[in-house]
Image (cartoon, rainbow, N blue to C red; front, top):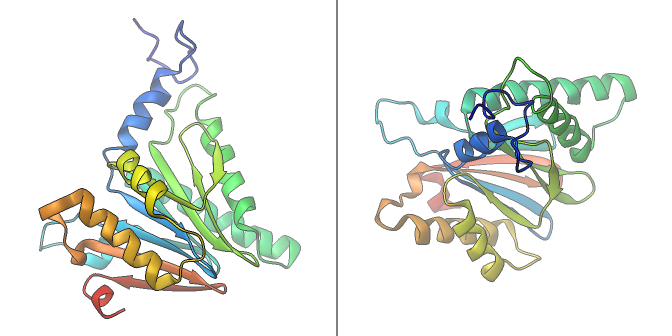
Length: 225
């Protein structure tokens, strides 16, 4: 009783309950898949907006952080927005200070540090969001940060709803050296397998980084690509 009243309080079994609650929040968010290819990195995001009154572009969760870095989130979108703005600021400060583009890991580490602080200090709750960063610094890279402030580099990963099911399929079907076309095709086929009759290509957004250049594709345009 009471061990979940603050993010600074450990339960007797060594867990921080508010952090675990935040992790459950992430799995309520729409899913995204990231895949590293031969010369590219691809993020496929489920918009999950079914209201035809909503303008689709406003629900796109793939955000440009720098000219060579994009990010997508799962969980509380407003929390993600704050961290995305912070990541953009960090990137621009690095360019002004060092006159060079920041590495993807540098930006990810700074965001992970902010997340960690909110599991340690009182008066605030942890950020209820997991974030996937795709970037290109000489080679394509993919990182994921979790609630606790940890981050890891991946060949392929998934965040959000049904993430464990998606990762299980990725372990079986993902191969290194994919082209951007094949990576998109694989990601969409996994979503189709998971979502079944609810699958519709119009609800997906794709971000591609190839040779340091960002390209975004949404909805019906995916059928042409």
